[in-house]
Image (cartoon, rainbow, N blue to C red):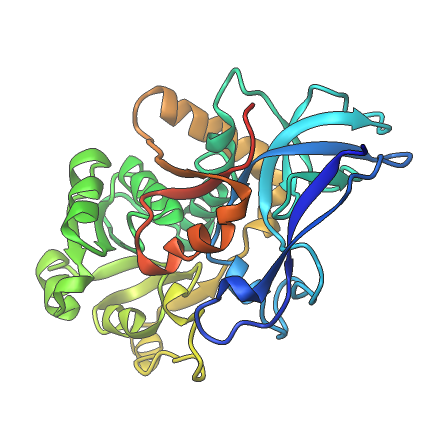
Length: 336
């Protein structure tokens, strides 16, 4: 009997929080790679907030996932068959492989990785797209200077936790905004943030004023919405606001809430800029080299929250929006 490939395909455009019924869990015969292609056995799938807007039929930085298509996702796996000159069976790779057990790739944006240097989940977290997002978003867009105050929202998440640690490495005062006392303890006691604000306790504006007495120079925003407005009230002259994500808005059924306090950008001559990590793809090797060094020195730590079973994808994915996950959310598909 020919090998089979199980997949999650988009079945409907979600309204609000996605449901299992928004995907079809399908199975098909596994195809052989054609010339200049290779077959990957997917071992781990990266679950990221950006996957939610990819499901909407709206203009974005990438085309939406079409109805009937395999759900788009980053992944890590092992090459099991190849007709591509640059990839051989036994190679470990990361790339956009989708929510499935196997994927055919032509090598575009697929990257070989070395599991002897770091585990595969780390190549999806600190040394993967989330770590690169934090690195380039903070350093290239935020441009922190020693002694400045950096505030990070979603600070216990995959991107925010790395951004905050890099800000500390760059000798800034770092304040993280996270949900729950456990996450706040994690970023201060384990990651070295100077202070943490629990947004679930309310009165974020008062807490920001208390923890940032000299104002805010850089804001790394993963949340958007009302939190962005609270930060705008306390930005300094020439502040830099990095728009990395807006997870508070991704499941809205009403129009996205824009910043009501945006005129403070004019008054404070501040800059608010969006960033996409793919704009820096030619420099990933440079970033990975520096972050690997920081990890070896104990200055940069990561945490992967790994769940098993491809069939659990819809339920595990939703942990991103309920705040249940701790660190980088990853789905384990198969044993290495």
